[in-house]
Amino acid sequence: MESIASKNPKELTALVEQISGSDECKRDYEQFEEEKGTAEEKSALVYQKKKNVVMERKQKKEQKEEAERHLRLQQELVMDLSQCMCVGCLQLQYACFSLM
Image 1 (cartoon, rainbow, N blue to C red):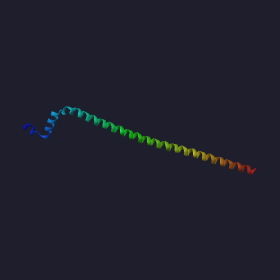
Image 2 (image 1 turned 60 degrees about the vertical axis):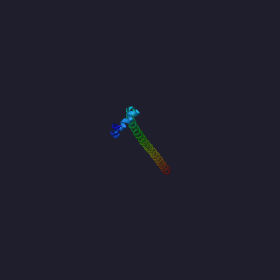
Image 3 (image 1 turned 90 degrees about the horizontal axis):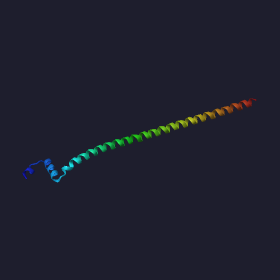
Image 4 (image 1 turned 90 degrees about the vertical axis):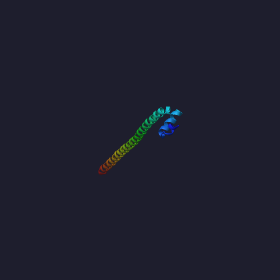
């Protein structure tokens, strides 16, 4: 009994674990803790990759919308210029016919 009473808390814990048989599970527990840590790291990396993909997708969508807007404005400009040219041609034709 004296040998038990003279043990420090860490030694007492080791003795209780030995008696209860939980010391046999210690290796498994430590292995599972390590696996858990590895899985958490992988999960964090996957989440970061997903976040980057979502951000890139948003940027690409914005770039696509900007390019489409630019093309639409170019087409509108061409149409406006062609209408101005037609109006100018009509005015020129009218001026020519009125001179005759």
